[in-house]
Length: 234
Ligand SMILES: O=C(O)c1cccc(C(=O)CC[C@H]2O[C@@H](n3cnc4c(=O)[nH]cnc43)[C@H](O)[C@@H]2O)c1
Image 1 (tube, protein in one colour):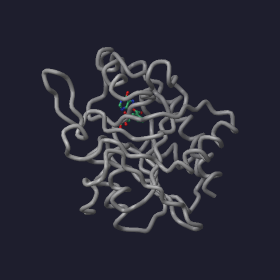
Image 2 (cartoon, helix red, strand yellow):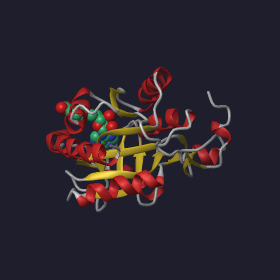
Image 3 (cartoon, helix red, strand yellow):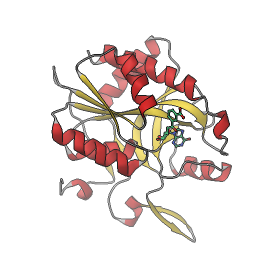
Image 4 (cartoon, helix red, strand yellow):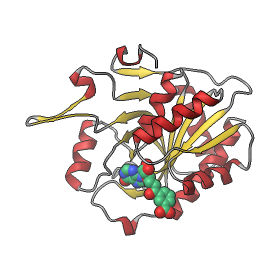
């Protein structure tokens, strides 16, 4: 474990460059996401795509295990996610500008206190700015609908309008929500590796309506995004 990890200032950045020939580790949460990503990557040997499991703890453990077993130059957390109203429509893509552990902290009668405010570390991991720009520009050039903004990692999927509003207010610009990014990012950060998070939007963040999730549409968008990732990181 990197002892300096929790001694960082609240915003943690990892600005690693992807060296030629370096391998890319892509962490999905479930097999359906992995398979969509693999279809997009068309068997490119530079990429390893793994199923992390659902939630930040499983994601961190799986990513740490993969990073201990092989050498990588970049880690990508990728899958489906919820889109915040007015920021990311169902079927669109979101590339994280930062990865935020949105429910890591303490409730108080006066409101939520993040881990940062409690003085125990950082809830925010910055992504590699250069890779973010390259990937986003390539997705746009391919005509894919893409937004850039903070992607929240939550242990509990938002299921009420009030929770969606509270989370959006707490993280200005909150664009998408998923359950693994922060776990993957902390493992990558511990290895000094750059991180990206890409989400294909399957549902709006808000009142739970699982039957309305457009998983097939999101998986198609994830496949398309993966084929662009292949071009960018070729
Ligand atoms: O049922 C299926 O066919 C299926 C296929 C692919 C993925 C799933 C999942 O249920 C994946 C769970 C995964 O989804 C992320 N997610 C999606 N929407 C949200 C959300 O609104 N808030 C938080 N997380 C969301 C999350 O990362 C889960 O790991 C099913």
